[in-house]
Amino acid sequence: QTPYYYKTNNTGGTEMGDEYYNDSVPFEGLYMDFMQDLMRISDGDIKNITYTHTSKSSIKRHPSSTFTAAVQDIKNGIVDMSASAFWITNQRLKMTAFTVPLMYDKIVLVIPKPRTDRSIKYQAQKVSAPFAGWLWFVATAIIAISAILSVWFSDRENLAKRRYGKSVRVLRQRNRERKKVYARLALDAFLEKGLFFCSAGVEQDHGASLPHKFLMFGFGFFILISVSAYVANLAA
Image 1 (tube, one colour):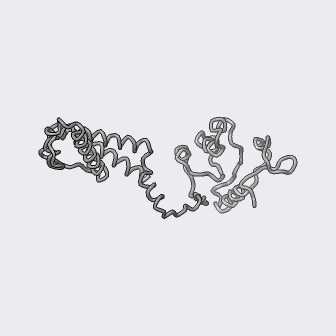
Image 2 (image 1 turned 180 degrees about the horizontal axis):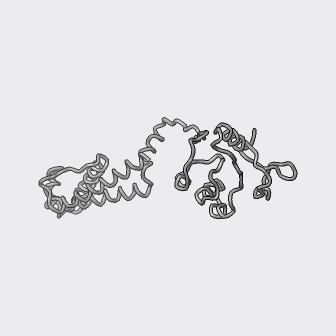
Image 3 (image 1 turned 30 degrees about the vertical axis):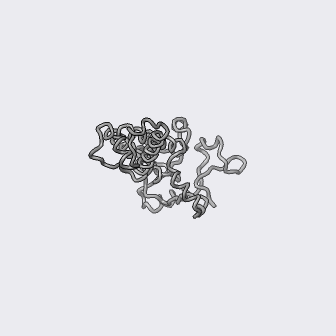
């Protein structure tokens, strides 16, 4: 296969060294043949083509890409055009215009074929994947704190009677029984707040106290942030 462009060195090889900057050594290759055919079919519009190397100053300015350095020479007016396999980038388009592409590079990303795991363990892990373990711990702690505060801010007397048929006031003399009722109220509130968190909503209790409504407002805002972050990480 003919190289795009090359120069023949003193040993007959095509690896360019100092002869690259020697204009007395002619360029050869596929693009030189293309330019000669282009000059032939131009019907006299292109009378002569003089080939030269990319300037050292442009190479020094763009050390990471000799192709961009060649485009820099066009911008600086050192040459009229450059013949090579250029990628059309935004940076180079700001320097000069390009012809219609002669060929296209097809670039694909090859990755290992993802495995299919339908086990219950894997599917359960996917549910918790969007959040790190410490973040789930923080969310659980916030739910627990919200549950305890909701019991503290609520009318515990009526709540205990309505749910368990027991009066907190009567139980004040029976310390053990009273702690059991409070523990059940706290557990009930924790499960309730956990259900609110999983369903992304809070219950609207019109008869609740003002501190309890403030608590639910803050907890609802926490749920909003958590759901937004969860869905964003799940989609990513």
